[in-house]
Structures are given as C-alpha cells and as structure tokens.
Image (cartoon, rainbow, N blue to C red):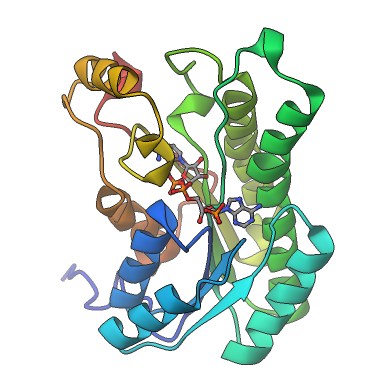
Length: 257
Ligand code: NDP
C-alpha cells in the first residue's frame, strides 16, 4: 500500500548549484548530490574546474565550475544566467559559501564586521534572490538549502564570533522569510545548521579550542561533511515536499544540552 517511492531521494534530471564548492562541506556535498543523480555546478571564489571534473568522472554526471563572488549581486545574476545557459536549466541551490572570523566584539573593526556579514548573510540573500528570480521567470519550481550554523542559535565558545553568530542567525531567519514568501511559487527554502564539522575552516582553529569543543559535544567528536550530505539531499529532494522554512540542526546534540 504505502511503499517508499524508488526515486524518493533521487536528484536525477536536476541541476544543482553549490556555492563554496571548491573545498570543505560544499565539495563533499557536491559529490553526494552527483551520486544522487544531479548535474552539479560549482560556484567559488577560485576556479573549481578540477573539482567539477573529478565529480563528473566519478559519478558520470554533467558538471561545470564558475568563478563567482557571492557578495557581488551583479556577478551572481550573470553567473547564474551563465550556468543556466551552459546546463540548459537550474533546479536546486545549495547556498553554502561562508567565512568565519575569531575576533572579540570590542576589537572588531567595521571592515571585519562588514566582511563577515557580507559573505554569510548578504551573499546568501543575493544567491537566493537571483536563483528565485531565475525560477520565477522560467515558470519553474525549485529548491534551496542555505547553510546557517548552530552558532545562529547558541553563542559559540570561545567567544569572539559576534559577527559570525549574528550572520548565521540571519540566515536561518532569512530562510523562513523566503520560505513563506515563495510558498505559493513552488520554491522551497530550508537551511542546515551544522555543529562543529571537520573542514579547512575549523582546521585553522587552535588545537586546545578543538579539544574543548570535543569535550563538550555529547557525541564526543566533531562531525564530518559526509554527515551533512544526507540532510541536504533530503531537503532538496521529493522526500521533503511538505517541508519549507525548516532549520535542521546537525550537531551531535551540542545545542540541546
Ligand atoms: P571552508 O572554508 O572549508 O569552505 C568555504 C568555501 O566557501 C571555500 O571554498 C571558499 O573559497 C568559499 N567562499 C568563501 N567566500 C566566498 C565568496 N565570497 N564567494 C564564493 N565562495 C566563497 O568552510 P566549510 O566548508 O567549513 O563551511 C561551509 C559553510 O558551512 C560555511 O557557510 C560555514 O559558515 C558553514 N558552517 C561550517 C561549520 C564547520 O564547523 N565547518 C559549522 C557551521 C556552519 P576560498 O577558500 O577560495 O576562500
């Protein structure tokens, strides 16, 4: 009677953009999206052609890479159009590029603050808006997953991340706002909020801080980008057709203790 559709989680015949896909979470999730059947376009500050080619070879999907600074709204619009022209269409966006700054609020310069908020919040908005415009103007439905952070819910330790925490809280609320605004357009917008995940970003954090984190996470370890991929596929796929505006926290129980 009730059987899970064989292709419930399939992203076949979909084209997905992944921002910040040259490394870290973006790169790993891009591979998983391809494994789920999607053609993948990587946007990054630097040319990610090598990553795109690796994914195409490994999973037998079409891929492309575009240099795009997500803080530049004009570049975002033109690169989304270029990606659509190259791939024929666009369906999914993993809106993931972000940066982190460890600097106490008292010493944070206006430039420090603006830089973090510009990439983490403005960049997410510019990408989502241009992607939404593309979908609406082509009478298409589509799906967006933004990368927020558990730091948008709790205050990270050690402190000194007011800009990061605030920008990520903004992403989770932007997600809800867009979800409601675009609900009648067939565009779903959700976010993931990772906890401490081992990537290049956290790799630069002092060893003693990392040890402290691990001692305070109920799972007693940091997560991996692979452990986020299933959530992104779920939110981008037909397995979650009644879900929009959700912020999925994936943190080894860190925020609930
Ligand atoms: P990484 O630093 O490893 O990767 C981030 C990627 O984003 C890089 O390829 C980077 O390019 C790219 N990028 C940065 N700025 C821009 C920009 N303006 N335009 C386009 N691309 C850009 O980070 P993670 O993979 O760890 O993080 C990915 C996302 O997950 C971020 O939004 C982060 O805030 C979030 N997150 C990460 C957590 C973690 O523990 N790692 C926890 C919670 C959230 P380049 O290297 O060339 O600068």
